Image (cartoon, rainbow, N blue to C red; front, side, top):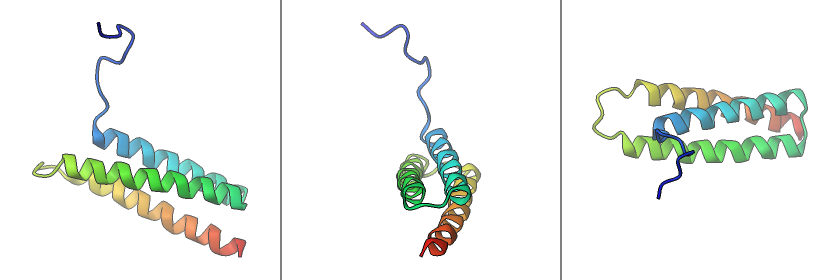
Length: 92
């Protein structure tokens, strides 16, 4: 018997990627405001998970006409990775 309290709708891979990138953004902002090895490492872990979620979304959307959401997610992730690299460089 299915759990009656579970979500009625599964998350799409694109939504998962978008949520992962939001988490990266928050983690990078935290690292920028409180630069430390720990906050940088947390942001790197979030970025790793977001990259995996993005790859999963890309593989599930092959052949899809509208690639714009994935392109936007990829651009946002790239911007956060650049910002994270700046924080990491300033820690050295």
